[in-house]
Image (tube, rainbow, N blue to C red; front, side):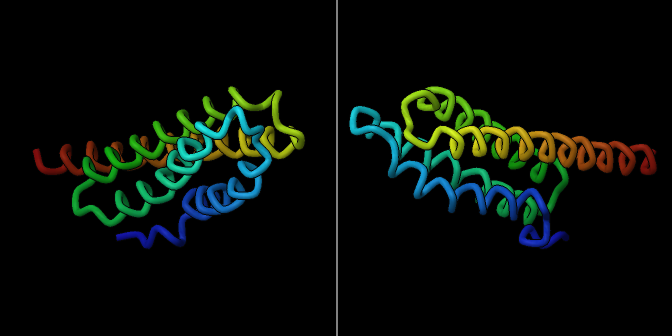
Length: 125
């Protein structure tokens, strides 16, 4: 069983969540409502990766990684909404690029896990 903290995608997701604290403090007051949503989505990514990688079955692992990937999409959507309104738009664009990278890594990991399950199923037959 993999230690999630050793996964690059987990480390990147955690770093993104930490970096979003200062970024969200720059959001205009009229977008205060979105700050908790951004932070929750960001924290859900690394938390879902950690929980999923500790699950006992491959389908459970893949399901939690799917949840993490969904949270990545949610976060990216929120960042698109605020991109033009934040003084330091470069940091928001960086966060969007991180979301893209995390999503690609999660998708590859999901395919790998689901492939292992298929291979295991084939060996049983």
